[in-house]
Image 1 (cartoon, rainbow, N blue to C red):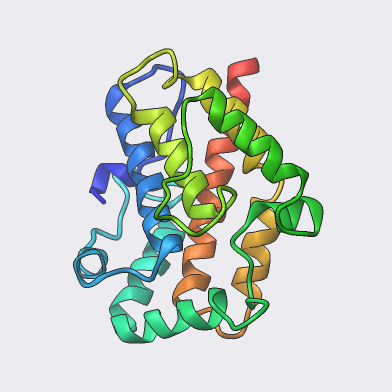
Image 2 (cartoon, helix red, strand yellow; image 1 turned 60 degrees about the horizontal axis):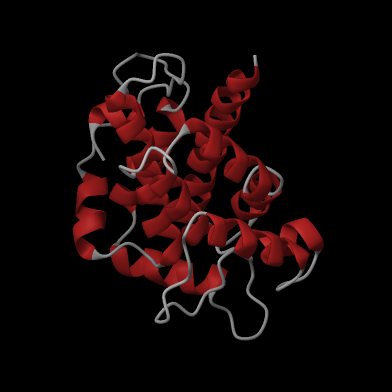
Length: 211
């Protein structure tokens, strides 16, 4: 995560640096939700710059809170928190699967629709991955791919808008609210605040494509 990655994301001029910054944020979120941060990632978070290039930029406060949480908590504590929140025996405390929020159940129609869209993009779940495709980490990885892939037939703003609106926009807000409000969410409470702000920027920017 670089200093420039945290600037307010703009869509209007198609600047390559800003697009790569968006992809980098999605990649970070995929790492944080797929598993607790490893030592290398956690070390980078702890020394990350806590100000965006533009003072008072929208993401600045939530990013500062995330970095502060990483400096205050040990990696082992964050790993325990991840397990408590997302890996509970039976039903987890907080679901990371979009279908749960969109349909109230896992493995339902939203997952079927998602798999159809992934197939049309030429993407499929690797055999070694146990989580279904509607896991938040997987969805963030798809968005990263749609931003950063070299094939402009796939990596373009139209594809990003369609995927975001169909598979992320409808449930990320209630997910963030539930996660932030959970009494065990300390580090991941800060992550939820950053996700909420980042996705709000994404929604606003992608809406501009229709203007």
